[in-house]
Amino acid sequence: MWIQVIDVEYKGEYTLKCVFNDGVIKQVDMSPILDAPVFRALKDKEQFRKFGLDETIFWSNGADIAPEWLYEHGVTCSE
Image 1 (spheres, helix red, strand yellow):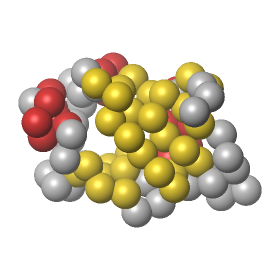
Image 2 (spheres, helix red, strand yellow; image 1 turned 120 degrees about the vertical axis):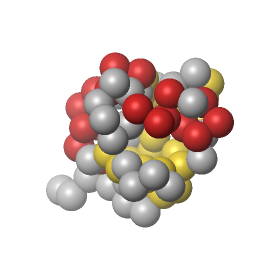
Image 3 (cartoon, rainbow, N blue to C red; image 1 turned 90 degrees about the vertical axis):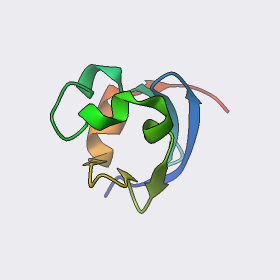
């Protein structure tokens, strides 16, 4: 199955709640990757919160994240 993010919600700090196309819901702490050059600008929480969704999450600075990474590193949660 091709994993896609179908819904995303900002949960505070650098955490996102992602709903995947297989029905699984996970909370993902993005803070561990914010030192990577493409994500560094997102340490500004105002910028971090300005994400979009198109099968995965992307930001206006050109950064995006593989839905597989989100799935792998997220913690399963309920609604």
